[in-house]
Amino acid sequence: MCLIIFAWDPQSDTPLVVAANRDEFHARPTAAATFWPQYPWLLAGRDLSQGGTWMGFTRDGRFAAITNYRDPGRTAPGRRSRGELPLDYLTGDTSPRDYLREVAGHADDYAGFNILAGRDDGLWCYGNSGPEAQPGKLAAGIYGLSNARLDTPWPKVTLGKLRLRQLLESAAPCHEALQQVVADTRPATPEELHPLGLDQAMAPQLSAQFIRTRDYGTRSTTTLRVRRDSKVVDTATVSWRELSFDDRGQLQGSEQRDFSCRWRFQATGM
Image (cartoon, rainbow, N blue to C red; front, side, top):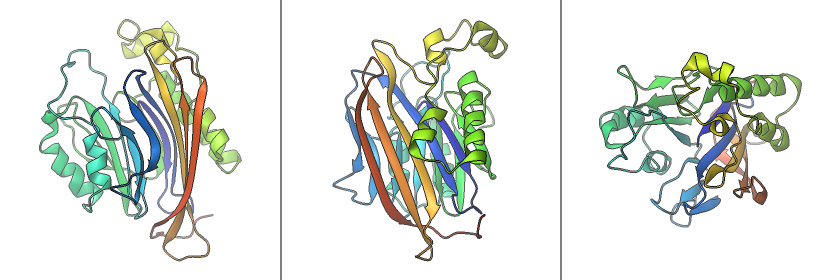
């Protein structure tokens, strides 16, 4: 993923809401999100080049997503593919905290990344860029993650957080509304990018939430909602939708999956 806007509140009846874009070269082979034959409890897209994923959810309530970290001074590819990190967490049984601490021990094997890993007892974030990078547990709130540290105020992140906050204050988050949280195609202005030092380092079209160029752009938008199942104790209903786009930004496919997962709710929300 290259833009993830999400709300996390473990004490709510809707503990996790996500709107995310995956930006990638159009030539890179990709399989749309589905339950994997070898891991039938895992719903995720697949990078057919390296075999990993960028975002997934499991029937036992594990969630993970990853973004690349933009660092012009660190462009060499890593020894290992970043897509293996969310896949390893999603197919394992290690807690989010322990998994990210383990990853931190060999983080230099990968090019720059940020990873989210969570389940009902906590959502954690870790990035391997920066001198004091350590896994951290997230408090309840609305967050944005792109190709920098968590909540770095890039215009696309700031806009997405504002739109998600407004949405959650006004209505239940349907997929169509969540898609609009990350659908803006307008590039940021030089005045917006200059204070962040990005006006010379980032092509204008890459500053938009939804990117459209001939070779590289937003390949898919994924929206996700985890909600308490009122009929079954310690169970949530996961609703996941993935929209796929071509190099002109035209919709090419839509997949929606709704399924139950194990989820121990901490308290009854509003």
